[in-house]
Each structure stands twice: as structure tokens, then as C-alpha cells.
Image 1 (cartoon, rainbow, N blue to C red):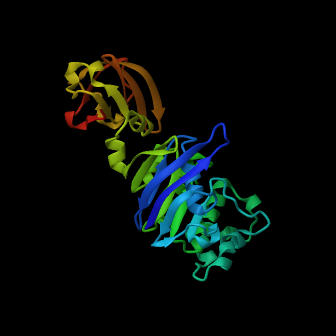
Image 2: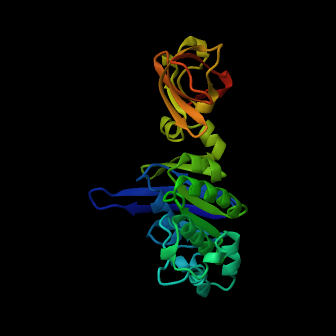
Image 3: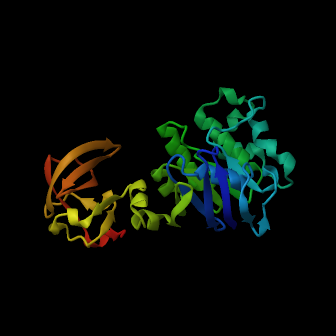
Length: 310
């Protein structure tokens, strides 16, 4: 179990702000730190890894990590930009941390598990981005860390490679304790058991992934996780919405013949579906649909899908 209660400062005197976190990551759980650029995600991860000074405390499996250097903290760090040693071979990169640990995994077996065994004698400069990230993951796994820290490991990859590696990560992180940083809500929902949404160095909401996405506690969390956030007073009565500020996910907004009138304002294809922005009464709602809708349509929302924010 990873227990975090810390404050880390970032920035110069004129632009400094604190990142404050009080979190617990359970054994075998992947916690995703989700938030926009500049929200403090990477600062928090660097503090956990020992790359940044902090006040407070960090415990891993009951032992304090405070004051310990990165190589003695028992964590595996996967960087966004790979951070491979260019003068070492792929195999040597994977085995690099073994000198600091007694209980390590076989580098060649890890490379084989990640589908890059044939690259063992190559130099990092000859690899693609996806291959480099697989090597970086193998390096983190080699030292049998008590927890994994991953800083947007998929963000620099092209879409097909990102999707393949995301699927591999689900297998690799099963039963591992991990903290995963991303600004991408799709990745967060795919890999995380729980999500902590960060804003301006503070945790805006933390909870099971589906709970955070389906029942956001603020307009910021609703909008950042991709939900519609609307004032019920702006919705037509036919939508049977409760009072207050409401959230509803696009997948729960349906283009239904029995719904209320709506005008299509924008249509964007996203892979196999269309993302449709609709004008419904005085409000704007986003929906997903398999077919391109006509300019004028009707919309329905199951009454149980509305979530009151305030």
C-alpha cells in the first residue's frame, strides 16, 4: 500500500504554487492522476519517486520513503520520453537497475514478454517510439518494484501504437500497485481502478473510476471527464431533469423519436461514432451516435442518468 500525505512546491517566486495530496493507493490498484497541464500531476509523481523535495510523508508497504534517494525507494518510474541510456544496448538498459537490487527479473524474459526480444542488442537510437517505451517498461519491471509510477507513458506515441501499448499495460499492471499520470480521460478510464482529478495543485475528486466519471462532484470534474454540465433551468421540461446544476455523460444522451426537439450544431466523427453537439432548449448537450443525424432531431435522457452537482 502506498500512503501519501505531502506538499511540494513548484515554480519561481512570482508563479509558485503548492501541490497538496492526501491519498492512499491500495495493493494491486492502479490510481490515475488525471488533470490538465499545469495541475501538478507530474510534480506529485516526481515527489513520490524522490526526484523532488516535499514536506509531509510518503509510506510504501509500511516503510517511510522520506529522505530516501530514488534508487532506494522501491519504485519503478516510467518516463514520458523514455529516458533510455543511448550508450547502452536495449538489454543493458533493462538490466541497469539490477545493480541496486537483489531480487530482479531476467531482462531477456521481460523483453520477450513485451514483444521486443529481437531488439535486445540494438541501440535505443535505432528504435521507434513504441519500441522505446516497451524497453522503458521492461526496465521498470526488472527490479520488481513495490509500486510503479508512470508519467504519461503513451502520450508521445501515434494512435495505433498507443492503443496496442495501452492494452499491454492493462496486462502488465494487473495485480501491481501503480500511480499513472495522464491528461487523457480515455486512457484514465481504460487503465485506472480509481481516479484522482487534480486542479491547480489540489485534488478536486478521488474515487472509483466509474463513480468519478458518472457522478462528478463539481462542474470542473464533469467537464474535464467529458460529461455534459448544464443548468436544469435551461433545459426543456420534456427532459424530466431534476433541479440544480446537472451532469450527464454523452453516452446517456440518446437521439430518440420520443424525445424533445433539438438542433444539431456540430458533428465530428470519432472512429466508429459521431460526436454530436446539440442545442436543446437553451442548453448545449453532447451525444454519441452511430449514424450521422439530420439537422433537426429529438433527444431523450433516462431520468436516472442525471446527476446533480449542486
